[in-house]
Every structure is written in structure tokens, then in C-alpha cells.
Image (cartoon, rainbow, N blue to C red):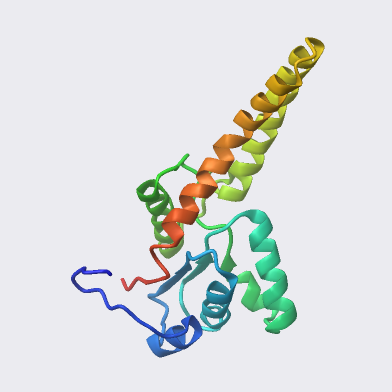
Length: 186
């Protein structure tokens, strides 16, 4: 249970909660549960509001699938879908829940203040570059190990190169289970 001052625990469906909040241009909606049954409902209603920020935590693949679901099953328009920020946060190398929260709120603050983020701070650009770097490291290491015919070492090196991304996603999942919906009023 949450026992924080100025915090209200809401036990309604996310779409009903978004509608009840009567969001305005001073509000941000951030979906963090990693559960499409909850996140999609909240986002479906949030993109129809004047909230200045609407976003969802998740991988590029999950966000692409979410966009497809919202477009196909919930008939959201391209304009409404374009309001959905995905994936959320800026790239600062965050790994722990507090660091992820800081990176999310940094992006929310930048959007609120009309600051355009350079490509290296946008998570989708940064993680693409990180994936390329990991693949280059893996390709550089694997031929030497393969030449010695030791496939178990090959697998261990490849797994280690991928662990950076996996640990970040695991941290995000643990963090996402704590917060369902945030309303920020400036």
C-alpha cells in the first residue's frame, strides 16, 4: 500500500480514471505497468485529452505493437497516435528505478518547456546506437573464440554483450509495477 502524503489510491479501470481526472494542458500521463490491458486503455483516452505529455514505458517492439493495437482495434487517428511518446525517457544510461524515473521526468520537463532534445538523448536513437555498438563488439570477439572452437565461451560473450540491454529492461519492469498512472500539474 502507498502511504504518501497528497497521494490517492484509485481502484478503477485506467480509462475511467483518465476520464475522471479531466486532464488539461498542464497534465502528463505516463503508463508504466507493461500490461497492455491496462496501459492501452489509459493511453487510448489520454491521447484524446489536451494533456501536454502522453507516453508509455516499453521496448521499441512493444511500443510498435501497442501503436498497431491502438490503431487497429481502438480506431485512433494518426493525429492521436502522434501524441503518444514512445519509448519514453531520455538516454542517460539509467539502470535503477530512481535513475529511470529521473530520465522520464527529464523528458517530461523538456516537453513541458518546449525544449527539443538532440538525437543522442532520444531513447530510440541512443538504444539503436547501443545495439550497433554491442553487435560490433560481439562480431569483433566471436571470430577469435570460434577459431579456438569453444562454442560455450562464444555463447557467454554474446550473452554478456546483450546483458546491458536486458538488465535495463528488467529494471524498467520492476519499476513499472509500482506506478500505474502519474498526473503532474504545473
